[in-house]
Image 1 (cartoon, rainbow, N blue to C red):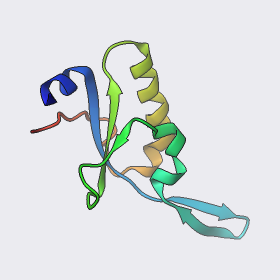
Image 2 (image 1 turned 45 degrees about the vertical axis):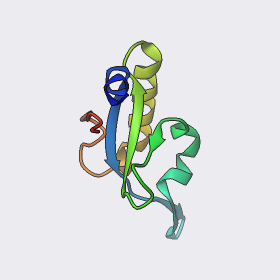
Image 3 (image 1 turned 30 degrees about the vertical axis):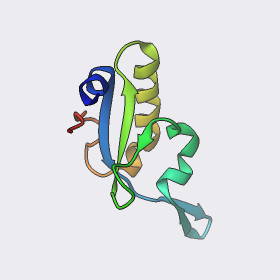
Image 4 (image 1 turned 60 degrees about the vertical axis):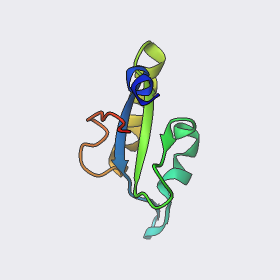
Length: 94
């Protein structure tokens, strides 16, 4: 099963940061990453378990939809992930 998933999807493990909210007086609060990007990441974001600090993002390898989804997500979230993790795909392990 994991082999089939790795053949079909590109996976990225990302460590995220909360999204700051600003007013004219400066930062006033933060919104959790998954809550802020919920609509963009719906069906694409997974956690290995509840305690995990990393999120696994999945995008179809074949076809223009997967590549477009990846580009859209990367452009929107890249300021809220640590390091270059959104640039380096990983394979799932059993």
